[in-house]
Structures are given as structure tokens and as C-alpha cells.
Length: 252
Ligand code: PEP
Image 1: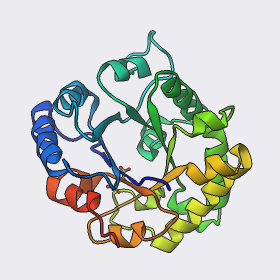
Image 2: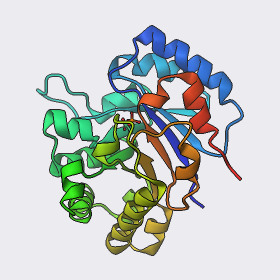
Image 3: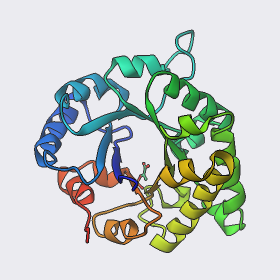
Image 4: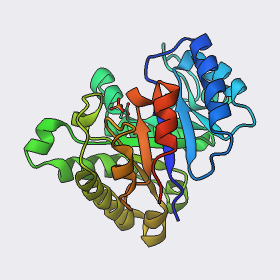
């Protein structure tokens, strides 16, 4: 059985003080949660303080990006060993906003995944097509390119440490969610790509999250799909009530 993951990507929101107050609230609310793994991804500036505030809790801390080099002349970048040092256990890699705003390519995503694995971090790897690509009937081609590019040269053992997130770009921050069926179809495709590259067992065990305008009122339908193993959430992860409603999604 794949344990679901509910992960909150805070993007460029919250000061250090706001972040700490927020996670103290979450920590109390989620003390008894064990039906899913909970991850929060604050901005870089708040990572250390959030990790300290969550020490010994059941909430994991992720960074939103990393560089692939251990150290060096890379102004503005942060390495995976620095993230580990700051208290992270996870790192989001290849988010569409990084691809869009920073021209991040599959090749860089691949190098970042390898660096994260080398620092004992769990990568949360994002893939997903744009609206133009979907309308041009290219979803399968794009997912194939992003998947094989991201996971080039990885072993089955390494894939077992990775969480994949299907995030159709047209659904991120737009209020336009993929229907559970559309999301599940892409998840099936991604799992088949995993099976071809890594074999049956790693593919069956791979957790694939859906991301794109997940809200308390649509999380139940999405999570009811056996192919959907959780959610990567932006907007609705920023308020304790809505994030708590997502973590406590309807279960039968
Ligand atoms: C995201 O940031 O990965 C995301 C899915 O954002 P939102 O939930 O706001 O669409």
C-alpha cells in the first residue's frame, strides 16, 4: 500500500515569524495524524526556524528548490547539503514555476534529483503539461519527455526514495482543477513509464501526487482515485483551516 502524502508548497509567502506561528498551529492539529505523510515547504529564509519548531513532530520540511553542486560560485542558489543542514528532509524539484521563471530544463532537474539523493533528501519531482500542450494533444509526449529526462540514469533503488507530482500547469493557481479522471489518466501513464524504466515493483510503490488548485471541496474526489496518492498544494496550504481540511481529506 502506498501511504498518501499531503504536501504544502508555500511558494514566496510567509515571513519567519508567520511561518513559525503557522507550523506550531499545524503541529498541534496534526499530532494524531498517521493516515498520510504531511510535508510543508516554506521559503528558504524560514527553513531552519520551521525545522526547529517541528522537531520531533510528524510534519516533514521540504525546500522548494536546490542546486546540484555541493558548493561553488552560484549566487542565489542553495545546495542540497545546505538544505539538509537547515533541517530539510525533502526538496521540491522541477516545479513548473521554476521551469517557467528560471528556464529550468529536464537535464537540470535530473542533476538536482541526483544531488538531493546524494544528500539523503527525498525529492518531490514535478512534471506536467501546459494548456497549449494539452490542447495540441501533446500531454503524453511532454510527460514522457519530462519523466525520462528527470530520471535518466537512476536506479530502481533510487526511485524508491522519490515522490512524483503530476501538476498540469493549466491547473496551478488558476482555480481550474483537473477532473479526478483526467488526473488519474496521467497518473496511469506516469506509472507505466516508471514500470518500463524501473520494473513492476518500483512502479507499484511509486507515490504520485496530484497538484493544481486542490481545495477542501475537491480533495475528496481526487483522493478517491486509487491512482492518486496525495496532493501537492499551493494556495490552499497557506491557511491552517484549509490545509487541515486537506490533510483530513474524506476517507471511507
Ligand atoms: C503548486 O504550487 O504546486 C500548486 C499546485 O499550487 P495551487 O494549489 O495553488 O494550484
